[in-house]
Length: 334
Image 1 (spheres, rainbow, N blue to C red):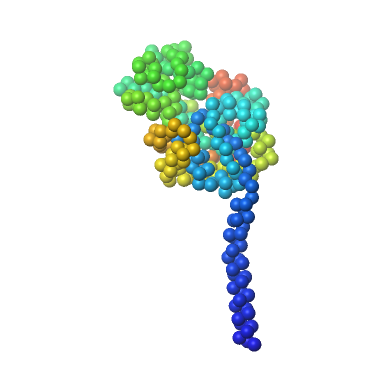
Image 2: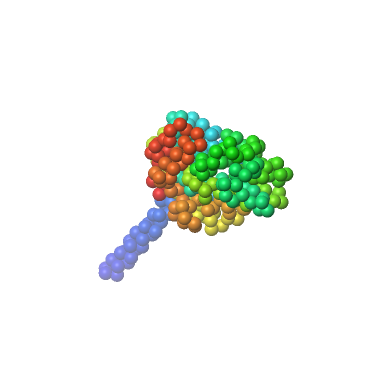
């Protein structure tokens, strides 16, 4: 009888252990069986190396693991992204911080939920043989190219304002997009993004010097991840899940840039992997508060937003700087 009871207990304990061992697998299977929530995410521009983490995160299932079926939409500028967010056409989008300040003044129901660029990546680009390295040089008759009403033009105006330089003393040349005016000598320097125009100029055969406006007094966030107010209020867990997945994608992209660009190339047409790898490499420093501090991705502060709003007012984008609380929602990126 004792032998029978011992065998019965062994079988019973074994069955219990087997059930416990399979319980996590069953939970995972049940989670995987749940329908994913479709989420539309609009980029600020056409996909490039700076957007590679989102494509890597989708390819590796990071967003799906958060219950998100992510639809990445090519963009056509931050202003259009704000319109789409305000109308509720998309749940999330990438928007330049200064454009978000304008949107707040206009009453558009959108807010930043995470910082994608901790500072603006806009630079003044000049030939390395004749570099412009100090804002004071802008008053020496140099021809400075920038497209009026563009983000780079706004950054130039902010640079002049914070360094107390009268725009009338600067020889401004209104140019279109692209670096051809610099390559052919139409201008002595032009405004652009460090991960775009600067690379284009060097690809065109011109070694360049870069003067970052962020290093000369322009304190403003760059690109932000923004959401419609209704989405933030009614689906905060979805926003948190998106940001958790994005943080994982950022970490994975830092660890393997080539894999991130490969995911981008697989999902988009006419991608030059070699170029976009350079774009990604120049983008990475803007993701973090401190160099390589992956944990700081997405961080926003009241001070950072107040400085951004004041910069927008300084360049005439808004009449009065909105309060920081009207521009962002803290804590969702944690």
